[in-house]
Length: 271
Image 1 (cartoon, rainbow, N blue to C red):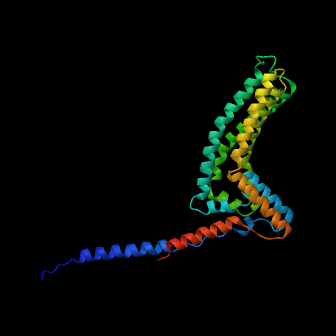
Image 2 (image 1 turned 90 degrees about the horizontal axis):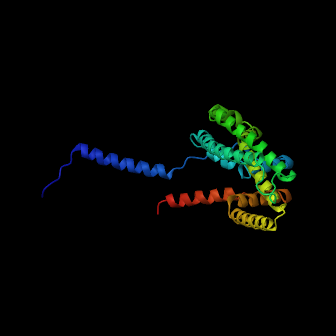
Image 3 (image 1 turned 180 degrees about the vertical axis):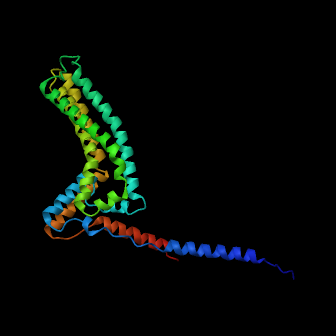
């Protein structure tokens, strides 16, 4: 009977492959413990500060708390990646803000071509002037944020801000001001156009203006209902109502995370 002789090098290679596979399998089964969110980032215990905290979180981040941001920042380079993405988006927003500023300046500096549609009247012209002011300040703050934004990416900034929930919210306010100024200037321009159409002496212009805005608001309403914005607002109001009435902490996000972890453990467990 012929015998097969294997060299020591081949045996060592097979053993190394087996060990590496087992090690990989064991490493996949083990999960590193998640670092919980610090107590100074959690909602305050008092009623009035807690309401202010939830409202500020929702207005600035569209979330009811800071848990999701802690999940981002506890990842390696999470703080740096967050601000890199923000600076990229703020540079794109500056381009759009410049186009909006040019549009408003054209409306203000040129007379209306038709007397029936007079956007130089008191109401529309005031709205256009306010839109121009917000556009100018929004563009200046966006340029300022782009210049000093590199200092926000440093870890020492994160270490200084994570000491207190209110300090971190103030930082988010600074990042959010250019976006809100852009939104306000855009809304003022839209209101100026709508007021011009509704105050027009032409019946057809009023009809077309009303039909246009009715369609736009219908599309906006349909798009908001299935969006995360509406679901998060509903969850935040529901939680605040329950905590105010019977002091029951009902956190759906924690339940979702628990179900996800249980599913991962069930999928990783041997049959």
